[in-house]
Amino acid sequence: MAALLVFLAAGARAEQGARPSVTPAQTPVVRSLHVQGNVWMINAGSVNVAAQIGDQGVLLVDTGTEAAADAILAEVRRLAGDKPIRYIVNTHAHRDHTGGNVKIAAAGKSVISGNFAAQAGAGAANAAKILAHEQTQILMLAPGPLGVAEAGRPTDTFFVEKDAFYFNDEAVELLHQPDAHTSGDIMVYFRKSDVIAAGDVYINTTFPVIDREHGGSYAGILAALNRIIDITVPRDKEEGGTYVIPGHGRLADEADVVDYRDMATIVRDRVRDAIGRKMSLDQMKAARLVRDYEGRFGASQGTWTTDAFIEAAYRSLSPARPAAGAR
Amino acid sequence: MPHIVRVFLFVTLVWGAAATPAVAQVDFSGVWAPIMHEDSVERAAGPDIGDFLGLPINDAARQRAETWDASLLTLPEHQCKPHPSTYGFRGVGNLRIWNDADPESGQIVTVHTHIQWMEQKREIFMDGRPRPPDFAAHTWQGFSLGHWEGPVLVVETDHLKAGWMRRNGLALSDRAHMTERFIRHGDLLTHVYIIEDPVYLTEPLIKTNGFRLTTQVANPPYPCKEVVEVPRDTGEVPHYLPGQNPYVTEFAEKHKLPVEATRGGAETALPEFGRKIRK
Image: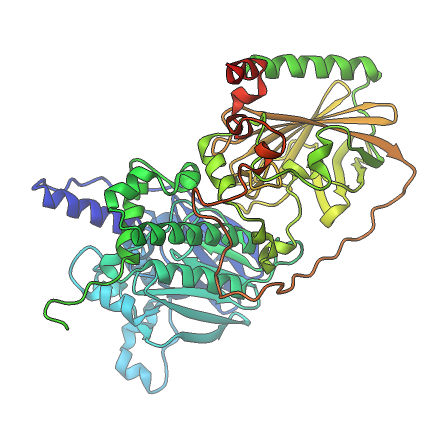
């Protein structure tokens, strides 16, 4: 998300003719907690990384910022010892989730053998595989704010709704959620551990972040939240059971996602109603349609302000205009 | 801390200290039945829609409550929610309390509470353990640390899920913090709770609950299994659009009260407010 916001901010400054300023990257404090089963949650400043650890090695969901890569690697080593990092799964293309790809992949090892070995080359075994949705790979290949050096790009992609494999004695499902936070989001569901690493389709720090520039949409975010709720099963009294690691924020379970989904749905309905009543974007902002949630999810300054969210919602939920010349 | 809060706490503490022998730890073990004499109107059938009288809520809380639709509770994912600890002591059903003691010293290390409705089970840690990190999961009962102030058990709770301060849509956020005082007077227990919430309250919300010791020995289980009660499209969430809830003035009309008073806010708790709206 932060990469998107840096990008948006840079874009805004460019439009004003100002030179983008460069903020020195800071190394965040990296901490972790055991979620359940094979899965740990690594909190690297404002970004979360999930680590699945077992006899076959380590699978990481996202790699945090580039500045945090060494600290994340150190935390993985503390948790997993010398077990090799076999896989990195990128939930989407934003740099705050892929910034450590190059360094962390280089610290891993892959099993490369059979007919594929000749194609991959001997060097492929000396790095972890990077898995992502095809749309994410496309975003990472393009020059620009989401571009990543070759060594940090996905090595394995898929273009359908779901990919799955078995690792560390459990099924790992990669669930594509089209056009949500970006065009290429995936959620990672560890079936035996009963943990979902949601990426930025579920966060609990701000209003939903919709990167329309890279294929995100309000409808996709809501579809993702409802899909998570469809998967999660509380242990008892709407608590525990399936846990959800958000891209940003604290560890959650179904009730937390429901609370967030309710908010996002209610806001969607209000914005739609305002659009139907021909309110302008400025009128919507002035009306404070989300007053009741601003204290928890809003911001008047910083990376993703309440106004930026309202604008994204307005544009995403407005009926598409017919193309010029279309009948 | 507002003056009214300081006065309230002083009176409560003096009352508690006078009623209980001055020992370091008091045993609250037993099953306690709620005495529904505080705010009894709201505690069984529940409060009216739009009744926010005397509560120190802000505009955000008011808008959220005025757009709340009770049909939300028919969604399967909402049906089995227990009361959070910020509300549970207001509810119906007995309260069971028991202790875990250190076998060497006899000191209480954990106080357990269990309220009957939806099995609200809670641990109050007395060993001063560190709080979970800020990125840990929140729970309905929160993370509670207790300590003794004379005979009074004082408990600080955070890591709460987003909950409610009243069953008519008045919400509490997951940033709420609760301070409680358990005060025993023989067979009576006074539970004082003070909630601070930077999202929905302008001042601390203070309430008390009374309990009487019973001879009942245990709380029965309270199983809950959600069902589809109303067929709905996936993701549909019942609510009212701002300004379109037809019931928000019903309470004021029923009791012939000025609507302004029923909409709550810190000043509506004060006598001066009554004089102001009579002008």
